[in-house]
Amino acid sequence: MQKPISNVERNKGIKHKNNGETDANLARWLFISKSAVAKIWGAYRNTETHLLKYNNCGRKSVISD
Image 1 (cartoon, rainbow, N blue to C red):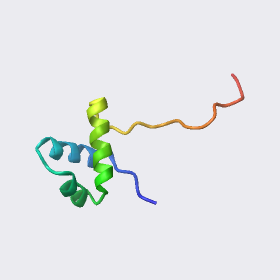
Image 2 (image 1 turned 30 degrees about the horizontal axis):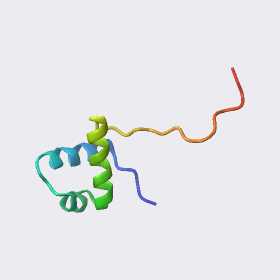
Image 3 (image 1 turned 30 degrees about the vertical axis):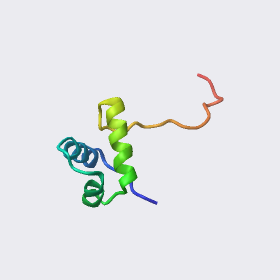
Image 4 (image 1 turned 135 degrees about the vertical axis):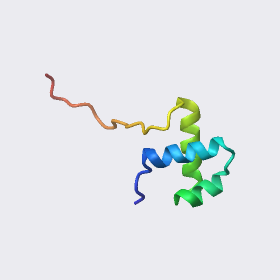
């Protein structure tokens, strides 16, 4: 299982991508796949933030307040 990509690594990648670095070079530099770089870049373009979006998946609790 891969370790999650930290917000610091995401920020570095986005900064270098904005400066014209290629996905392949970023992937080698950050030790992640090119598809991961593309996903981070796509998420950044859609949300304008590098921060992780936590997903609360699963069923809602049946127990009410």
